Structures are given as structure tokens and as C-alpha cells.
Amino acid sequence: MEAFFFDWLNLLGRWVHFVTGIAWIGASFYFIWLDNHLEIPKDLSDKEKGVGGEVWSVHGGGFYRAEKYQVAPDKLPETLHWFKWEAYTTWLSGMFLLALVYWYGAEIYLIDSSVADLSQLSAVGISVFTIAGSWIVYDALCKSRLGQSETAFGAVLFAFSVLLAWGFCQLYSGRGAYIHFGAVLGTIMVANVYFVIIPGQRRMVEAFESQIEPNPADGIRAKQRSVHNTYLTLPVLFTMTSNHYALTYSHQYNWLILVAFTLAGALIRVWFVARHKKKGSPLLIVIALAILLAVAFSIMPKSRATVAAQVTLDTIRPVIRSRCTVCHSKSPSHIAFPVAPLGIMLDTDTQILAEADRIHQQTVVFKAMPIGNLTVMNESERALIDTWYFSRNE
Image 1 (cartoon, rainbow, N blue to C red):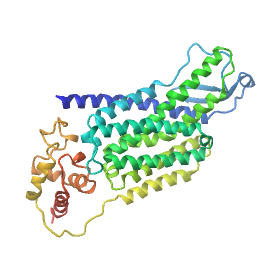
Image 2 (cartoon, rainbow, N blue to C red):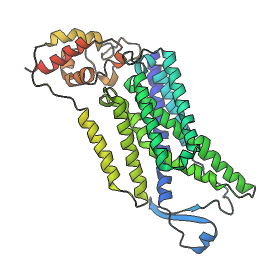
Image 3 (cartoon, rainbow, N blue to C red):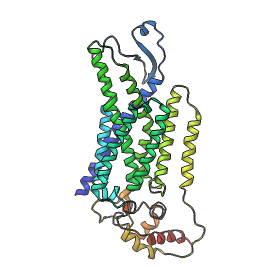
Image 4 (cartoon, rainbow, N blue to C red):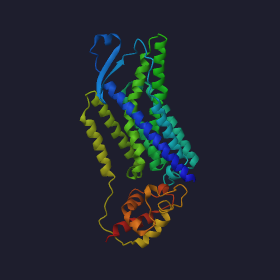
């Protein structure tokens, strides 16, 4: 029953996280697009009212005109829309999932004794410390003189990201490392909203209501953090989906693959933002695609020309039953899995043969299974499966 409630909470939490993430990222992408498409107002009276830019658009059968004031209008409207709860709810639901899956289930999804022999308490403690500490480091960098140079700040932030990716992959399972890297980036994004963007906007509104000239620095800081957020978006989305792709997180150089995807995602987003301004160079996309192609070729499994020995299904059947059917069975015996993950069952010879490619890929090529090596599959057993896979049709 415990496993059932765990799965049910996982489903609901993931659904909420997915929906609110779409709302947050969609709003963020739209406002970045809007800012970069503003044109100087054609009407002189609009300029006199303090309008710094305008944009016309058509959607859903109607025409829209959006205006952005250089500081604030002469009179605030009765209804002023704020964009914050999408960000907060995305982060809260994401942290709920992190706690449910990777903290509560640390021994399954977070800790890999072959990487680092951590206790559940130390693994969770490191997680909390690095997520909070990374925001403190990032915020301090933004407030320093370094934050005044977009190029220098970007280089230092990338170096910090490389250190994080490497560090997580030396401590956690590949899957746990990737999701924690994403949690750090996501926390930085939402903290930008909570600690910088929204407070700055509140001060601007309060200044207006008190008939005081708003401090333009609030708008400048908010714009800086908003731009940072949009560049982090695609790397975060990659880590959110990475748990489905063991070919990345289970690789020997998983940290380098994570860095490559992060850089490619950031470059793609930079190109889109620049394209909004009609300054986008296709070189950025070429570099991003070249990085992804390089990763694909470098992690491509090597084929075997010959097989030295013959291994039959009778030989590997006991290995499958002792190491795999604990989870992948019609009636799993492991408490964490009420049903077979992905519906993959290996109870019969027919099922084993049907899943031969997946078995070989996950246990030998990627070594992602058994998850967290819960059933302690050893190298000789993996080698046995490898030989069986290549000799089964000979």
C-alpha cells in the first residue's frame, strides 16, 4: 500500500509540475519576445506619456497592442497583473518531487554505492546545501562588479556549472546527479523571481503610489535576472526529461555530457533571443548542433565483430530472475515497485527474448539497470548477458 501512495503522489506532483512549468516558461518566453519586438511609438502623444515601446500582434481572431513604459504610467490601472505564482508553484512542485523521489527514495534513485558510499542523511544533506548554496554564490556574483559584464559573468557562471555537474556526478547516481543539477538551475530561476524581480516591481509600484520617482535600477536588475532565467530554461528542461535516457546519465563521462547539453541548450536559447532582435547569427545554432552531434557519436555503442563463446538462454535465465525480476515481474517483490516499471516483465523466456535489446542496452551498455544496482549485479553477470546477446542468433 505504501508503494501505491508513493506512485500516486508522484503522478500528481509530476502533473502539477508539468502544467505549472508550461505556464511559467510560456509566460517567460512571451515577455522576452515582447521586449525584443518593441518599436518606438508612432504616436507622439504616446511618447509624451512615457511609452518607451509598443508592439502590435494578431492572435485568436483579434488584434492586440502592447505598450511598455520607460518607467511607469501617469496613473496605474485598477487591475495590475503580476506573473509570479507560475514560478513559485513550479518550484514547489519540483521540490516536492525531489523530496519524494530522490530524498525519500534516496537508496533507490539517488545513492549509487559504486560512485560514492553515502548514507541517506548525508546524501540529502549535501543536496539541500548545494541547492541553497548555489543560489547564494550566483546572487553574490550578480551583485559583484563581475555582474556588470555580460561576457565575463557568462564565462564564470558556465565554469561554476561545469564544477556543479562534475561534483554531482562524483557523489550521486547519474540520474540523481542530473536532476540535482536541474534543481540548482531551477532554484536560481525562481529565486530570481522571488528575491529580485517581484520585490523590485513592488518598490516601483509603491514609489508610484507615493508619488516618488521609481528607481530605474530595480528595472535594470529585474531585466538582467529575467534574461538569465530564459538562458537557463532549455538546460533545465533537458534535466527534467533526462531520467528517461540512460545513454546520457549512465555514461562514464556523464558529467561532460551534461555540460555539453547545458551549453547547447543555452546557445540555442541565446540564438532565439538574438533572432527576436533580428541579430541572430546561425553560427550559434551550428555550434549547438555540432556539440549534440559530437556527443551522439562519442557515446554510440561499439559493435562486436565476433563472439568467442556461446551462451544460451538457460545460462542467463537465473541471472535475469535474481537480478531483474525483483522489479520487472508481473508481481514485483521489491516494496518500491507495486507494478513493473514501464510495464516491462521478464518472467518468461518469451518476454526475455522480446526484451533482449533493452536488457543488453540497460544492463551492459549503459549499466543503468538494476536501478541503483539494488540487486548487486556483478561484472561477470553483465559480461554473461553481453555474450548471450551477441551469440543468441548464431
